[in-house]
Image 1 (cartoon, helix red, strand yellow):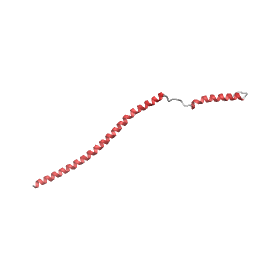
Image 2 (cartoon, rainbow, N blue to C red):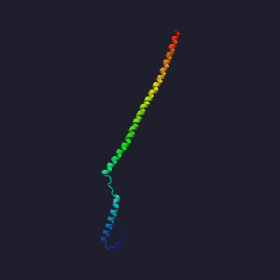
Image 3 (cartoon, rainbow, N blue to C red):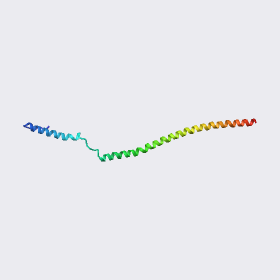
Image 4 (cartoon, rainbow, N blue to C red):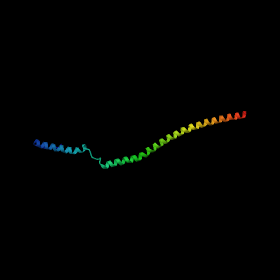
Length: 108
């Protein structure tokens, strides 16, 4: 604080009040929030979100498509395996019937 030769208390009070107000003026910017969220900031945020969506949307879309196609392929693969097994059984049955017919034809 500044030291002064002051004779009366009213001058002292006035000086202290001016020092308080000066100190308050220096400290006030630290406590008051700065209004930085304006229209331009809003536009920038919306633009950034749009760019993020444009980048991420195709990735998610293609991952989804790949997942569902792989499920379809898996179902078709299981059906193919089942049909192959059924074909093997039918061939064995046909071979058994042919053998039976050949044996019966030779008997008569």
